[in-house]
Amino acid sequence: MPLTPLDIHNKEFSRRLRGYDEDEVNEFLDQVIKDYEIVIRENKELHNQMMSIQERLDHFVHIEETLSKTIIVAQEAADEVKNNAKKEAQLIIKESEKNADRIINESLSKSRKIAMEVEELKKQASIYRTRFRTLVEAQLELLSQDGWEALETSNDSRNTREANEVY
Image (cartoon, rainbow, N blue to C red; front, side, top):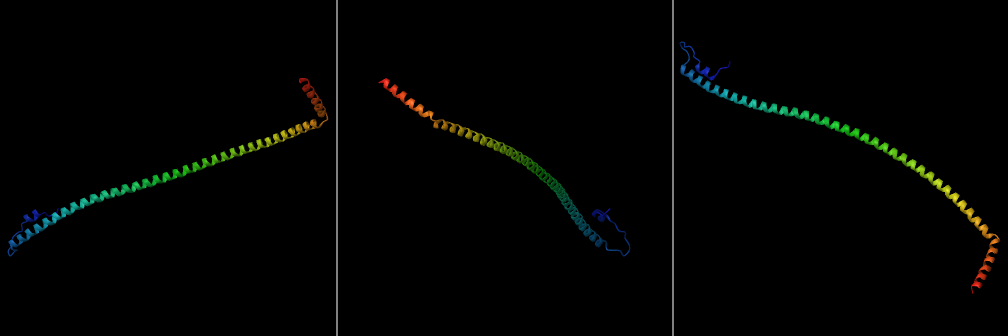
């Protein structure tokens, strides 16, 4: 156990012949007591400062650990978000490709259907044209026959008779 200022103060030395001067020894001991008290006080103050600094250091170490953990968690969360975004982007791309394929297939099917309808319309137009040409040619042939002139002549004479009868 360390010496206290009281221990130094209460210390008694045995007396001998031709020993030290008692007053000098007492003065020296008083000076030692004062200096020792100062050293003890400074030691307590330094110890208190050290404890305060240690508490702050522990606090900052705790903050550092918390920040490290937070950074790790944030990095993991960012990685997870990044991976999820990549997966979602891949799914969107696949779905878009499927939709594009479906749209292309539907367009090709409609295009083929329209092409077939156009061909059918061309055939029907050709048939109609041929029939109409045949009909017109038949009508022209009828018109070019001699029987029309006789009708026109008989028609003209009937009209003349009817016109005369009315007057």
